[in-house]
Image (cartoon, rainbow, N blue to C red):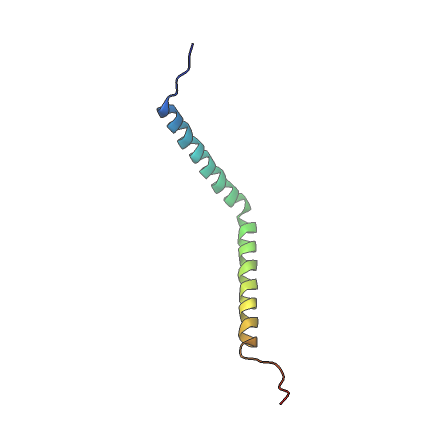
Amino acid sequence: MTTCFQPELFKQKQEMAAEINRIRAENNYMLYRPHYEAELSKQKQLEQEQQQRQERTRGYDGPSFW
């Protein structure tokens, strides 16, 4: 008995695997959503603090010795 390659079954298998991966990603997001949001908030806060530090030091050339 020989097995032949059946493109329609291969395509169906790929589509099913893609759907499973999508559902897994969605479930993981729902499960870990508070963690994702807390980390995102933390990153935004750090970016704002860094931007504020850059704005405060902008234009300062250091002490003048002249």
